[in-house]
Length: 95
Image (cartoon, rainbow, N blue to C red; front, side, top):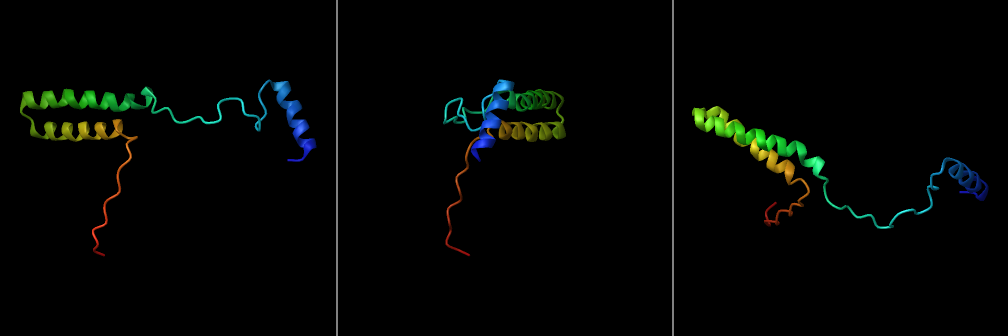
């Protein structure tokens, strides 16, 4: 960026009270702290509904309700464990 442009941008950012884009204002290494609890809120709600439905399905002896609720509980478990890294499959030697 030419120096003249940088001076103009610096003047503009001082007027608006925001730091210039090329200036580091926070820590240089902002590592990901982990998922926020709000991101898992939908998965927790789905898991709670699935478990309530599962209890109803067992109490009412409804096989289809039990099957659907087990699938929903598994889906909610996958959504809650989204950040886990999966290991690659080992090579079998066959092609």
